Amino acid sequence: MSKVRYLTPEWLEASEKAFNSDPNFQESLKTFTNKLCYRVEADPDWGLERDILFGSFFESGRLTKLAFFTKAAALQDSDFILSAPPQEWKKILRKQNKFVTDFMLGKIKLEHGSKSKILNVAPHADKIVKAITQVEMQFPDEMTAEELAEYRGYVERFRDVLGV
Image (tube, rainbow, N blue to C red; front, side, top):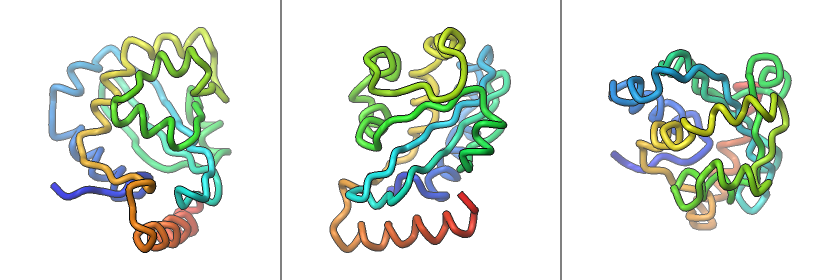
């Protein structure tokens, strides 16, 4: 499979397809039901002129939604919103850092939801990361200047179309 660019509809689609094609993911998360949204903070060097939110919703291990959200929709529909700079999310998704450690160190912040309840996500965090990283990703800091310029434009276009 070819690389997909991080924070694009193609990345979410490929990740959802990979998750749903492997029943082991659903089985490993069968006791997990939560609606998580992730805010990736703006970073012009990454082609992100403004914050972007995406979410992964699980019900008894089934991935019911993997999509981009407006802030209002994330607040309304999710149990939690977690935020961090894009470099921090990359470390989590590349499995260089652990979600729980970075959360406890304050590198990932809880913007919405209960601090005590987010700790219930901790035992499932590595499985969630593994489940949504089955596709090879290209991050903006790995792009050439030309690729980054094209990516920046693409992100703005699909965000306008999706209203996110």
